[in-house]
Length: 324
Ligand code: HMG
Ligand code: MG
Image 1 (cartoon, rainbow, N blue to C red):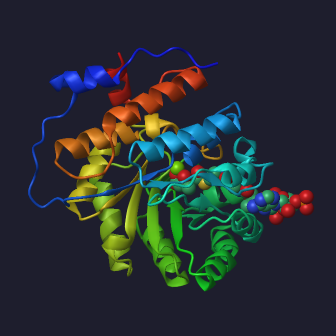
Image 2 (spheres, rainbow, N blue to C red):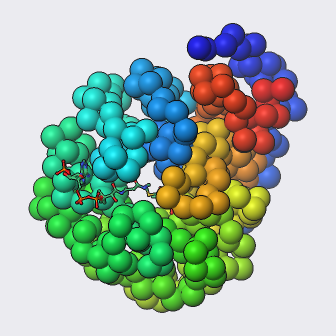
């Protein structure tokens, strides 16, 4: 049941103190692309299944707030992730806005067939840098996960459909502990060779620290993945996500994944808490004078609305600060 919200937008527009002062830093990119994962990475981790009309409204509000890339859902096994079992209906009912991309997550050929039937125009496949997570998340080995993704990438490329490749557990794994930076670098290079257009390096459980991010980026580039094809997918479990974004920016990364209101986690990764909140990311980027195209007050209002729908407050610091 939606609760009544106090009006936020007029307060933000009127109150200078609730927008960050802009102080650009030399050497950072003028613009970055935010890859919004809330409707997929966020809602897949909710205990309750969020009703389809709420999902559709969320996606539409995110687009209205200026997010140009919104991962809408996933075509995984409904037995594994019942929260997103309505992917086919969602894509059929989605109001696709011109200029907004709506990629979907696909694990295997069955998922690819469903995504094509749903007229998805962009895909993301996902593999792991560790054996344990490949087993937990996909029920296979690390090589098995790449084999599962291979026909998806090939079939998509034949149709000129871009495919993003996620590599999970690039920095630490709840079953295996620390991860050698050579492992995500090697997997990322294999995915680029396969034909993935962008590689999203995932800190699935949010344990990465800035020096480690730089090391993994350097190793990944040295393995043959150009920096302009690398995105960072950061979770905020240990409060390191924004520090990790900053070193990513300094290293020339221009694509970052985040979820509105800091929703998220992963149902198959022990200790994965929320993704980096899009609001927290936008606050920092706005303060640095880096263009994102996102309207922060509209996004905060969306997360407050969603928090009311979910019946619990958003973990985002910016949503809490602006909404209090
Ligand atoms: P499985 O049970 O081993 O599949 O699951 P199977 O091939 O043995 O088939 C069993 C049944 O499932 C069959 O149906 C298939 O048709 C059906 P039956 O003949 O018994 O009626 N099936 C499917 N149905 C619908 N859609 C499909 C599909 N595939 C098979 N795509 C599978 C193997 C890979 C499907 C399963 O392990 C799976 O879906 N895993 C996904 C888990 C998941 O979604 N995890 C979260 C996303 S990853 C993430 O969050 C990390 C990320 O954010 C980055 C980061 O943070 O690091 C991306
Ligand atoms: Mg994730």
